[in-house]
Length: 101
Image (cartoon, rainbow, N blue to C red; front, side, top):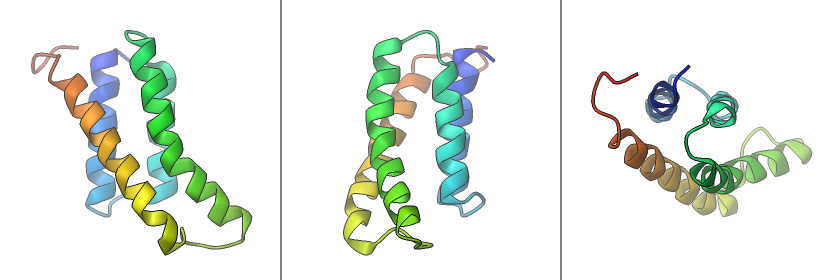
């Protein structure tokens, strides 16, 4: 899959999460899978991983405690990470003409 398609898949996954069509774990898994295959910008990939970690760490903490939800006190960090990821993906998509694969 080309990098432009990977960015589009990340965007679609974020939008599906926002619409309630995919759960948090599926969001994490799909974003990670796409990021693992991006080849055009290793620096962006590293920045993305740092932001993605802002989602994964609270999720892992909640799971380690046996909780089904991330605690409210950790949600501001999760929301900030989601916002950063959305911005990063949108900025990358803006670099690709529509229909470019």
